[in-house]
Length: 445
Image (cartoon, rainbow, N blue to C red; front, side, top):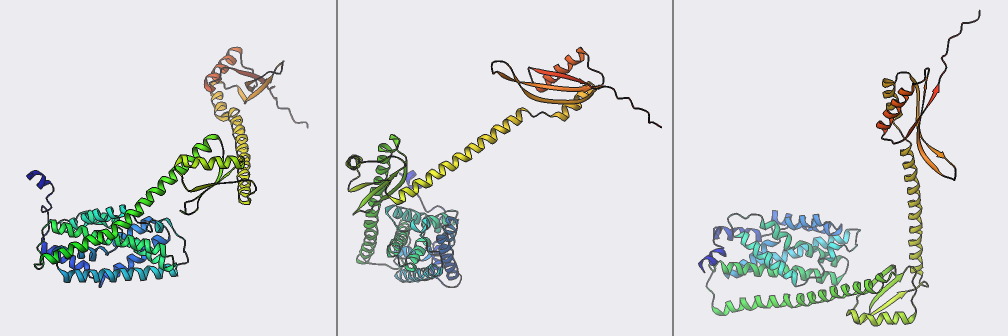
């Protein structure tokens, strides 16, 4: 038991408690440098969300001072310092309002109002976000109470993302998209509450001395408040997590249905759209060549239940649909265009191969042959197609040499053997072109 207690002991490496309290109080205030850093972090995060840059969003998380008042609130609850709690909550509310104002103004002014994936990721919180916030908060407060703060602080800032959901809520306000605003602000509240609760639990575990003695009634009130906050955050997030699981399973079943019933039967799908609206779920499919009659479509609709796809209608777009016709035309044109390109590439490759077969390093061969056989004056080498009877042909390497005095049979044999060895050829034919000796004539007077 003592060994187990030693393993989980958090008192080793713990910083002076008065010093820790001063650090926490300092990080609560949003005046001077902290206010400037907060404002800049809001703009950086908003720009990152706007241009869909993960790196910029992570940078904003790292420089954000938003965790200060949250940790302060959890710490204040742990030591029953209600003045510090009020101050922490007041500063947290102030920083939240500042974040919403700055991000809303940015997104209102920004000409880019497209919903990027970085924004969408902060609009549908679930129970997993609670786990991240809670365990990230535990790591964060443990790091705060250490003598050496170490690397956990930046990691906690990234994992327990506070700035991105706050700025996403600003995007929802700027674009009047209330579902985005509510989803993002709910995620922001989840992070704040569970980081605070994690801080409270670690402070109680470390047995920090209370600021003042409180009676059992006040302690119960604190426990009731924390329990209420946990339930308020946990129940909706658990419901959203369940819906996410159902949606993922439905998508998986739809993909399995399409793969088994159409793709594996050789039907080329050129258009696919799934609408998972709970009231009117639809799967729209368009095919390149295959047409289906009403009986076949009804049969496929019945097969949906086999794949546990309930309350969903399969709609197959036929050739009469304008958008399908346009899509088919585009695909066929693309195929034809790619075929033309492929044919051209094949012809070019064929010509290059033919050129490579007929290409010799004439200059080097001639230079070396002159050293071995000085009487050679001219030299030519090439592959020739030799025609024979019965429409048969074969390739043969032919070398033509010219010299004032012809090579002897022995020299010619040596020349052929040298060329065969150098060019790694089994067969070669050497032809001699004897050049008459030119005698200069006297000029006529």
